[in-house]
Amino acid sequence: MITLEQFRSGEFSLPSSDLDEIPALCLSCSYLAYKEFSVGDGIYYYFCGYYWGEGFTRTEPPCLGGLGPEGA
Figure 1 (cartoon, helix red, strand yellow):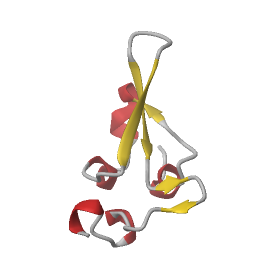
Figure 2 (cartoon, helix red, strand yellow; figure 1 turned 90 degrees about the vertical axis):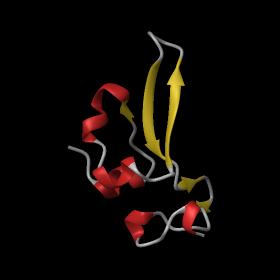
Figure 3 (cartoon, rainbow, N blue to C red; figure 1 turned 60 degrees about the horizontal axis):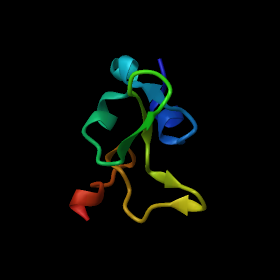
Figure 4 (tube, rainbow, N blue to C red; figure 1 turned 180 degrees about the vertical axis):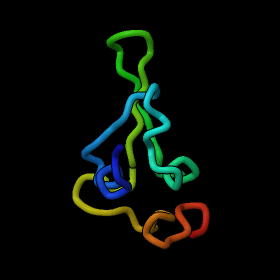
């Protein structure tokens, strides 16, 4: 099972078939994102979109005690 810290790092993604392995707190977070890969039958991979490139986004996600983008 993937930990919240591992998922939030953005280094891990999970296929839609493993949705039950995504930490429960992430399922209601607006930073939960997905990408479809053209290989196969529309396989989606979920990942945490909180971390983008050079730094963190301005609003903290609920897993870090923030309200997420909706609560800003």
